[in-house]
Length: 121
Image (cartoon, rainbow, N blue to C red):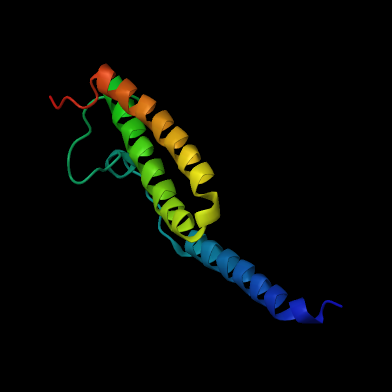
């Protein structure tokens, strides 16, 4: 009953054993002498300025929302175009559905435009 799964189970057992062995060996064989310099965060050779928990500007989220709006539009328009070309009998229904979808995306686009996310400062 379990014979077809034996290679997978053996591989899983090997991976788990190998991971445990590597982590255990690195813990046992390493020289750990923590200092203040070693424990300090390092970011591209630049000293840390400010707090890591700063609040982002609202504009950042608006640009992210703009990306999502256009990404969703692209992801759904291309397969829809293929389906529209293949399903001639449902052309009217598919066209109405896509017009509704584009109208909803248009509302998101107008919202972002009115909020000023397209203004580059």
